[in-house]
Image 1 (cartoon, rainbow, N blue to C red):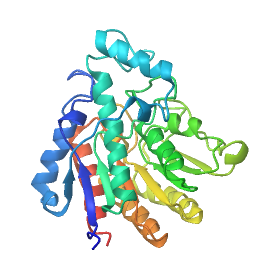
Image 2: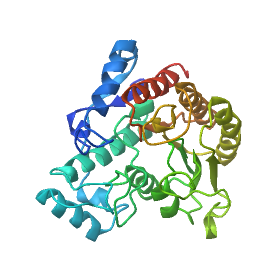
Image 3: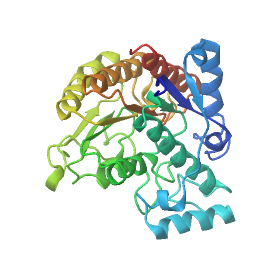
Image 4: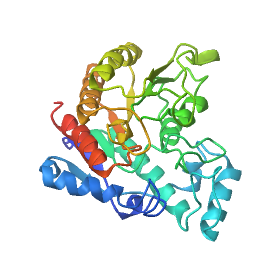
Length: 319
């Protein structure tokens, strides 16, 4: 007899908690535990199924990244010197292993969803959406979002994958990697690139070639709040629902909440709860319920704890 699937699974553990760049860096090593403490204090931990982390193999990393780049990350990680990009992403000792854990854990969550073991899943230290196929960027070493997408296409043969991003920063590493892909429906609500790194994601960027018209970029003005988010969200939800996706990825970066130290949006956790709840409804309408939420950015610890707990709570109560 088939085991009844869990409502919501979370994937946590020391291997992904180790992904970070020291306590003096915005992406410090305390982000994972800030979420865990809030999850337990809220009582939500009693209503989810916990899963361990996993480590991506070199072959799994190569689903998205070039062999030369993977080798470079390993070399610099072993030496613990230098930067993996122009200066945002230090080559900390062991960063290869912790970045591979982020990718492997996102893949493990993907497989739990594809197998029916759970209906929705959340990975807090994940959603590293700036890394390109051949380089790091914006605190992101291996792009677990892109690796998951390639995994779903190459191993599961999915034709319609939705990637939705509400992080304050544009998901450039995902967008440009799949700009011409007809299989990836991309919707990104981000702070206007004229005001924030990485400076991309203009609304005229709607895909190229076979992917033309399958990408939606919505640039939010600095100071945009929940009301602005809800108005913009309706466009994104309609766009995604019309695609009838077979799998939905939500990059739910908490740096879009008011008070983040490096961004300028002013959402509350209510926006994140709304996005998670509505995507769960879209997935249910599509007949599969599969939504993978990845924590993404967020550099105010109270904000990320509230936003990510709001996503988990929305998932729990989506049935």
